[in-house]
Image (cartoon, rainbow, N blue to C red; front, side):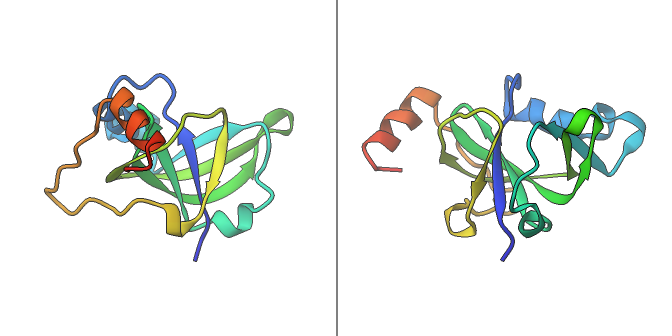
Length: 135
């Protein structure tokens, strides 16, 4: 089973805006992949190819993108190459963090079925429920 990772959707005001980042109009030249630059290459990068990058928005995992590859970037940085096909998942509370973090498959939320809507809780409520161990 591939390993996954999490990353904060920094600057996104809504889940719809994250979808816009990956839409044809949000990408240059209609590319099928997007590149996210990170300072440190994950030590377990090979295990993550075929896994997913889960996006955190308002303290919840809300969507994922398949990890296609890792490639060298300028100045010793690494590009995380992800598919532009964004898949919504059942929202799951997750604290924000800098950079990225590993996410085991057992801890990953399930994908939403076609036409199924995932209700994103307000960040404060999700945080309080998580502290109480209720979500």
